Length: 219
Ligand code: B16
Ligand code: MG
Image 1 (tube, protein in one colour):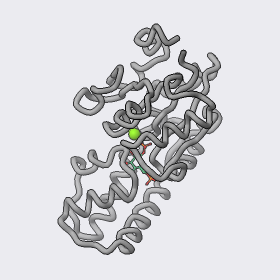
Image 2 (tube, rainbow, N blue to C red):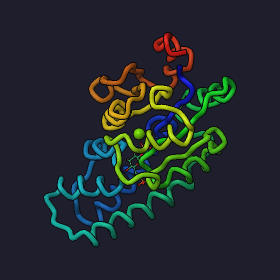
Image 3 (cartoon, rainbow, N blue to C red):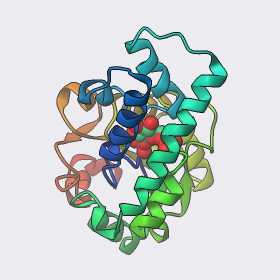
Image 4 (spheres, rainbow, N blue to C red):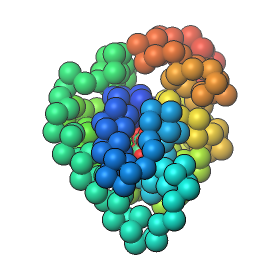
């Protein structure tokens, strides 16, 4: 029986990927590193330090750990500044409607994001009130594809993984949901989230009605 939903943030509730891209791009320019949208795509759902390691390796650069942390901090300052431009108009189409619907139907709702800035993003969207639990990049130490962030959300909602549906747009996020024993909804193309229990192209397609129709025996 499904009693709760756990949502990833970037790519599911809102699209912070563009702001992450612009911040990484600025840092890369200062470092004289190659960085483009193709590399940025590999950072989807990946933690901040894992992201900078991917960019560093892409450039075959050698950087000491403390310098790497300093660079990631610089990127974060640029990114956090840019979040000030985000408003309640910046939900992905369908996301706000779904959160409202889940509240009306009495489901428990958690956030399961890799971002340490998730509380600020929710504040900018005025979305904090939709969530019973906020799991972010500071809630657990092992990031996706490990299931820890979703297990954290389920535990705080006092639910078992099999009582929850996870919405994710990243390959590693669907892997995490499956490893943790959750039901999964993939948002995006087949080559990225085709291994989810059910996949939709966009959040606008992934309504409560559509999800209930797929998991009929669980509602
Ligand atoms: P921060 P999600 C992820 O968000 C982003 O997709 C990823 O690009 C970013 O590096 C990560 O959050 C960490 O973000 O630097 O703000 O802690 O999809 O897990 O909601
Ligand atoms: Mg995501």
